[in-house]
Length: 226
Ligand code: NI
Ligand code: MN
Image 1: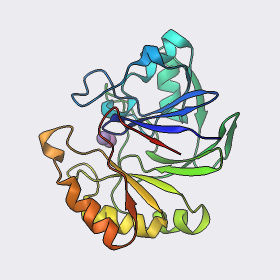
Image 2 (image 1 turned 135 degrees about the vertical axis):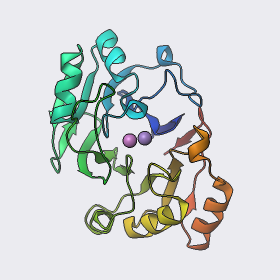
Image 3 (image 1 turned 135 degrees about the horizontal axis):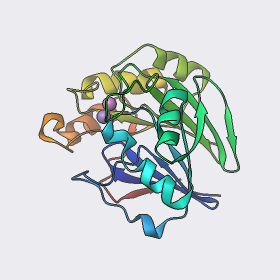
């Protein structure tokens, strides 16, 4: 059984399974790099790492239109519900079951508020298990030693890591994160969307490969088949 990891752009991904498509941090409208046609997808779940506009993105309008559940940390889920979304409020560490696999919210070191300035609970990373493949979406975060625990306990196969610096860790720290996470493959994210987070991504790939970690650079709109 296979599925696809489609990069929408920035930190937005679409995991395409036989059951339907799962969106994470669906920043599409207003994202200068986004390549995605929502009408082509059957969206069954939406996940949010935190409340910032470049992650919350279109989650609320998509949920209102298609009644797709938005899974987020309790406070952020409540905010989305107030705005008319269907929600599933969760918290750190629970193993949440779906017909396509599981999701678990884990730490990220960042801040989290809604675009209108309300407290959105803790920021998170999310560990997905889709058809037995473990995908770790780091959210927005600095390098942090929780990643050693994630590597030791959960052993992600693929790590989606922010590398753009300024708001998150940079490429040098993402290399350390990849090692700590014990990830075999890395897909970089949260770079080149705006000038403040421009990165020479080929240099990052070279550095990862020196450490025998595969780097899959996806351009917005491109997919990796698992
Ligand atoms: Ni953020
Ligand atoms: Mn961000």
